[in-house]
Each structure stands twice: as C-alpha cells, then as structure tokens.
Length: 321
Ligand SMILES: CC(C)(COP(=O)(O)OP(=O)(O)OC[C@H]1O[C@@H](n2cnc3c(N)ncnc32)[C@H](O)[C@@H]1OP(=O)(O)O)[C@@H](O)C(=O)NCCC(=O)NCCS
Image (cartoon, rainbow, N blue to C red; front, top):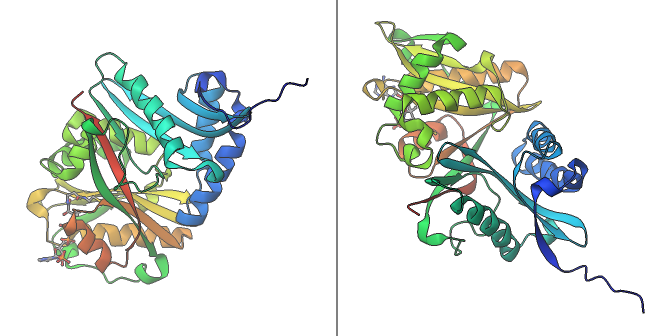
C-alpha cells in the first residue's frame, strides 16, 4: 500500500535548517501585506533575512506543513536583551494557535539562553494583540502603540512656527551623533518609551539606536535630507527629527524628541514641519510614524499636523524571568 503523507502535521524547524528560497513565498506575501496596509516596502528587510538564512546565521524558527514553510519568526540578541524582529504566518494559516506555536518556540529558546534579561517585540502582526492570552504572559507587559499616517499634500504647506525666532534649525549631520545620543537619553528619562525600548535609557544605548536606524533597513532607509536638528540660543542641540524612506513615495519619522526644558515652544512642530516638507520635495505622498498610545503630548502635535491613527499595534516586553 502506498504511504499516505499527513500534510496537515505542523512542525517547528530551526531557521538554520532552511535554504534561502524556502522563505520566498512567505516573504513575498508579507511584502504585499506591508505595502498594501502601510505603503511600506519591506524588500530590504526581507533581503537581509534571506542573506542571514543563507549563511545559517539567523536565530529563530519556521512552522512547516507538508514540506512548506507556513510561518516564521526570528530574533536578534544584544548583550542580555533580545529583540523579536518579525513573526509572520501565511494568511491561510494565520491563527492564534500557530502564532503561539512560533512565539512560544522563540520565547522558550530565549528563556533557555543564559543571562537573558529582557525580550522586546514591536510591530508584529498578531491576532487580537491586546485581548488574548500570550505565551509566557506571567512575564509580559503590553503597551499599545499607534501607527499614524498623513497625506503629504495636507502637511507640506503647514506654516512656519514661532520657534524660528528662538531656535536655529539645521540639517542633520553624522557629526551630531554623540550629542543626539545624549539628548535621547535625557528626553526619554522617566518616559514610557524608555520602558518599551531600553536603548533610550542610556547614552550608549541611544548611540546603538542611532547606529541601527542609520545602518539597517528595519525602519526604512535613513534619509538625511529630511532629518533636522534644533539648536537653542547657546548653540546646544535641543531637538532632533529623523526621517527615513520606506517606499519610493513614503517617508517615516523614525525619531523625534526635544529636550525637556525646551518643550512647548514649537521646536517639535518646526522640526517635524521641515522633515515633512523635505519628504514632499523628494516626491513622497505619505508619511508615517509610530507613537505610544499614552503619549498624549506627542499625539496632539501629530494630529494637529494632519496625522491620523491607522492601526494599533502592541509593544511587548517580557522580563523578570
Ligand atoms: C513630542 C515632542 C517631540 C513635542 O515637542 P515640543 O517641542 O514640545 O512640541 P511643540 O512645542 O512644537 O508643541 C507642543 C505643544 O506646545 C504648544 N506650543 C507650540 N509653540 C508654543 C509656544 N511658542 N508657546 C507655548 N506653547 C507652544 C503647541 O501648541 C503644542 O500644544 P498642543 O500639544 O496642545 O497642541 C516632545 O514633547 C518630546 O520630546 N517628548 C518626549 C519624547 C517623545 O515623546 N517623542 C515622541 C515619540 S513618538
């Protein structure tokens, strides 16, 4: 009698056992999803995933059925912290059970890693990200974050702000990296975003954050011409607004912050206005950003400038193991 293969058996496989092209259908579908919902071209991130899979250097797992990859998740470790970089299931297999299988495998591997202290994950497309029980929920904190978007047509013509009388606004240069790292650590001291991303809590962490957004494609490709700094009358750096390109006609604000003592004077408005105008000039039609839902100060500013919430994501943090 001929053997009958059970195609519905689902198994977890280490990403190191895959060949580069095994992930192609999944990464292609994920790319279409990101483009259609967020106007975001994930091609560069997918290429990086393929490159690491090829050299068997990507940590994570795939979910397989009948020899086909139906989902995957990967993570990167840095010191005693890990970041879950992606988790995606083919649409026809996207269920809470399958998400839990993948996420559970990733979390278990990380909890087995000596000295691991915290695990962060953001922008994962999960079912019911806030309501449902999650793997290892006893260690989990969830922070809702809004993905906001604005049509450039509506924002490129915003009037110049009063802060041009009190501050100097200059294009970003890499020379500002050290000062910008000090500003980030100060701006996020005691801020909820420092709970979600611990790189904001120290100057050395903020340096790594800046290096990541300039070098790696996770938040799009860094776009210097739409990135600005604000200086006060003593020439000190008191604000930054950093932008990236996430598709040929979409920009993204990867970071905006103002020193606590200079807030409410219009510096944030003016930097963001300049970033948006520069993105429009480059040919962008839309701009997006993400913001923690409890950060009402920032959300008010973004809404006033034409941004609207499109989708709510969860920022996950597992710690205290
Ligand atoms: C969000 C952030 C960048 C805004 O920067 P900011 O320079 O304080 O923003 P602005 O001064 O342009 O605008 C803030 C408020 O001040 C008001 N304002 C602007 N110019 C003003 C002036 N000359 N005098 C008094 N108030 C003024 C604005 O109307 C605005 O009020 P509203 O929120 O009620 O509309 C800043 O609060 C910050 O760095 N926060 C911490 C980091 C952070 O959360 N970053 C965003 C992550 S997504």
